[in-house]
Length: 169
Image (cartoon, rainbow, N blue to C red):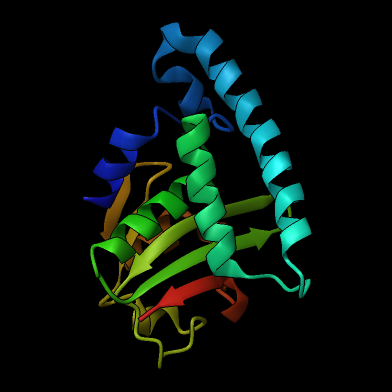
């Protein structure tokens, strides 16, 4: 449901990937406009946020909300924005638990959403928590048991505690 929601609400997905440019090949001009618009809006949103963020701390809930707003306003998004749209959709549907993963591994990074991960199990104990969890990856339109993360993205392992940017129970 979340991946369908993202596809229905954000016209151009993954313009930082070849697949994003291959989809809707006749819309190249519109995609350039959307991508540039997204970059400009993102810079302006970051500036505005830095003015209003008086404590100077990182607030992941604000970050996800802003990424969602950026995806809607620009009608495009990469993994971070699209995962924010999926995350907020699931949250509004009162689906719990939901984790927003933001994994950074050198030049490779990726964001996605995981549902039903047992918070009592350490993130690094992937084999244990992935049995009951479900992944939602709107950039690639993937949804399946979380165990597939090891096959889809082997470069991100081992997972670290900080890879879970935000969680709602």
